[in-house]
Image (cartoon, rainbow, N blue to C red; front, side):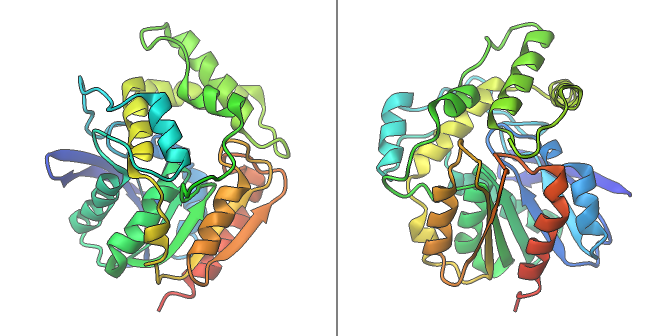
Length: 301
C-alpha cells in the first residue's frame, strides 16, 4: 500500500500527515489522542479501511511526532487547579486549546483539497473530532468518537492509577531504555484486559514510538489544551453529522460514562460498547470497529 506523506501548513505550524488509498475515494480523517503519534492508528487498521474503498489520512497533532513543537513554552495555570475546573466542565488558561487543534485538522483537509471527510477521533482525538464536527460542520460527512468524552461536568473521574500512568513518568532526559519500559508499563495499565498483548509486541511498539519522536513536554501542553477547553456539550448540541460513539466497557482511563455522555448529547448518535476493551483499539476487534464505522459512513447525506 502506497503511503504519501507531507506537512500541511496551519498558520505558522506544520502538521505532518500520511495519506493512503485512492485519492478519489471518500476520505477518512483519523485523529489520535494525548501524546499519541499517528502510528497509534496502526497501518494494518488503516489498510482495512482502505480495503473498504476509503482514502485514509492519519496525522501527528501539534506538539507530537513530526509536527511542530512549542519548544520552550510553558503550560498555563496549575495542573491540579486546571483538573478541578475541568471536572466541573469549566475551561482553564491554556497555551492552545482543543479548538486550535480542530482548526489544524481543518487546515490539513484544506491542504489536501478535501472538501468533506468522515472524521474519526480516539481519546483526546475524539474530543478534537467533536469540535471539528460542530466548528467545521460543512467539512464533516460523519463523526466517529472512540474511547473519548465530552468533558461535561461531574463525570466519573479516571481511575487514579490509570491517570497517573499517563500524566507522570520518568524524567525527560532518562535513558532510552527507561522511557521504553515506562511506555510498556503504561500500555499494560490502560490496555484491554480482554485482549492482552504480548510483552514483546508492547516493547516493539514502544521502541518504534520512541525512535520516531519523543517530546514529553508536548504531552503536558496537550493535556493543558484538554483542561483549557472545558465541556464540549455546546459542540455536541450543534452536531448534525451521523455519529457513532465506540467505547470499551473495561476502559478505566476514559470511563464508558464519557462515551455515554457524548452519545446522549449528540442528536441521533449511536453508542457501541465492547466487552474487554480498554483504552486502545485491540486488534481482534478491528473488523468489528471498522464495520461499525462503515455503517455510520453509509449514513452520510
